[in-house]
Amino acid sequence: MMDKLYLVARIADTRVALRSHAIHSVVTVGTPVRVPAAPPHVAGLFALRSRVFTLIDPHVVVGLPPVPVIPGQRAIVVDVADHGYALLADEVEDVCFIDAPEARIVSRLLPGWARVADAVIEHQGASLLVVDPSHFVTLPAQAAA
Image 1: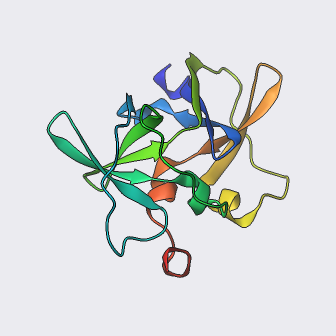
Image 2: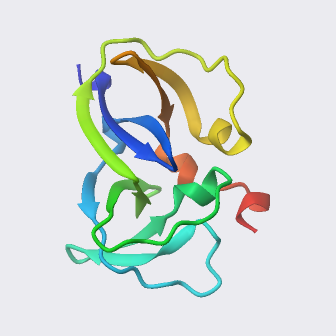
């Protein structure tokens, strides 16, 4: 049953669904510390519960201009390769069970979204992209440069 549990959010101006097993928590971000010479998708570092997280700006990952981090903004915490990351979220809508099956993406997506999206799922009359948080963290070398 847990394989049908999703976090529904708006990330980089798009409604998405993230599989619950990929999510550690949802937190409120303070003011991040900038990292000199970091890739453009790294918005900074911040500490939470004695742990340091790398803050990722999904806007940059999907090819949009970076957005400023607003203190109090929500972020979705994930672990990728035993490191803590937090994806900036425009809005966290819900955690819910979605009974619909995940389907193959048949429409053409912008290249950035095509790289992070695994599938599409129907929820409350809308199609949501099912995204893998690890794809926001690990950019191809040419995108990170």
